[in-house]
Image (cartoon, rainbow, N blue to C red; front, side, top):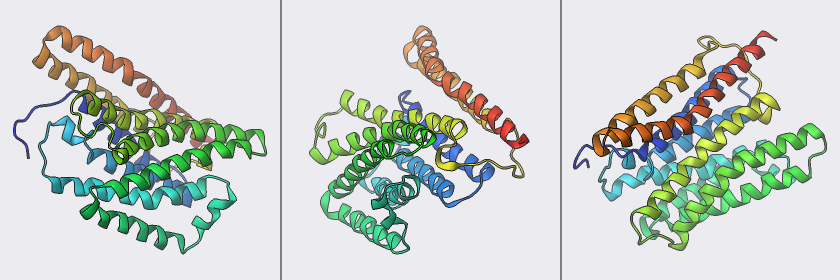
Length: 297
């Protein structure tokens, strides 16, 4: 599986996206009221991290792994779980009446059967059915998110809908585009730059929408998530996680780039990564401060 242990600097974005998704999921489960919507969102984040870490933009790219075809079964399984959990999340997060059918007890078994059929089709259809269903799901989800803006009845509801459409729309459009190219066969026979760009679009959307969601939760109570004090949750927990990740990525990338391309390239690469990641670092500090304020009220 591992012909030669080398690090691909472009793989750091995928690793960071996975850690950001999983960190927010754990944070919500430990420090927020565990209503159904909050738990569903946390599950979506956990599954999203699993999708990314098993994709080509995850550990495969980071460590330059040469993996057998059987490896991708884990990625396709995570994709199929996303087919199950994301519609359930949307049904509870968006106000459209047509989504209410997904709130019924029978919805989960039906979605589970669809996901299972898509998973089984992977063995005979070369992934096209999973990719097609995911493309449709993400594009339809974006349409529902935009539509919720126009049916909002109050100013606060409209602000929440706009925040939701922007945040999740970034992820839905980017993931829909990536899976859509797989369905249509675009870039399938090309290796190199196009594959790299697709992978960065794939993981980059997660790095964009999660900070927007975190800001929306604390500014307009997006998803109606309310924080509460839980044992083991301290004021700087989330900020400390981001500080550790920030240090790991900036210092690690500088060392790797310096070794492969020289000290100048290492310095420039680390500077670029610091520029891209530092807004997330500042946001995490702001989030921890806002959560601390919420605890005092």
